[in-house]
Image 1 (cartoon, rainbow, N blue to C red):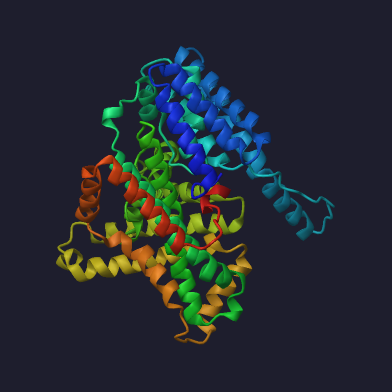
Image 2: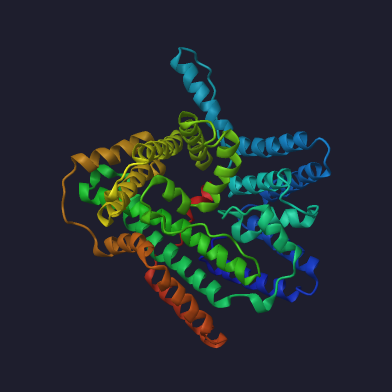
Length: 470
């Protein structure tokens, strides 16, 4: 069930009515949201609902074992290991077996094995990370009360974030579930504005770029001019940002209307002047998850410069593999690991020196341009289906003919997708304040008008969100 569809609109209206109608019976309210979350997931394929339920039960059981105080480490190992084993079965087993078969063939053996990947459940990586977060927060004593069974199920399966995040921390979301939502504290104006902005990003910008430019460039770069390929690369940078941040905006807005708060997941990442700043702004819930549950346990920056750089590269390699069981994702993760490690070396080189030029405006914009293009280079491998396709795109960029045959509408969408991030914070704050001052009737009319405009401007067919496949 895609967010920008009539089916989801009807489903969410039902969720609002049931959620607020059962509010005086708090447990019934949460059970209704849990049931609706399973319906939401089952709308795609009911066969995977038992898997979602089983993973949630396993996470709760191991969390209670951790909280009990005896054999805490064993419960954590069993819980995290079981969750990762489920993820590996669906996402990585076929990848590793196929690579072993290819290696054996390269050595002269003929294993005669044809490996087929099982059907990948939507959102399997996100639900696994939620399950692990539940256990890790219990391990670190961040959960004050014993975890309720129904609350743990809802934490893993809550439908706004179930498919593509943001990744919630149990320590911040479970306390919300223990309290009855207060209708008087719902920021309706902010929630509706987030939904409208998210739909505009996804339907108008991301879908237009995908259907009119990016898909064609990566499918057949040889038929494109060098200028079209370059615009396609920039277009994908805009597309993936608007696609994923648009989903997040809608998810945060929907959760807010139901009385729950999600964390910020994007903060204008393309204004970043360094790889470190980029990962503080891009997919914040994932980058902070990798930092807290992988990079720091590996040793973080506590064991010297060389070990710090190694930890960064390992973390990003695994982060790339988390995105997909393919070598192009590993290359993308490794590229960002090298960028982070290289930037640390650069900072160490100038540490303690009087470098006024590094605080100047021209250097700040130079650093932004360099960082953006380094990120775009990584996006080529992220988007390409294979190394051959990525190389074809890069080759065409340098060997193709430069021309001015660029569609104005597509160029405008690419500029808008990137340029939106340079809007000052006060502009967005003013929009929120204006929306909050509107009367309910005007809220509804403005929201309906915005939906009509988005429907007119966007392509006719809805496209899946990019991160659904992860």
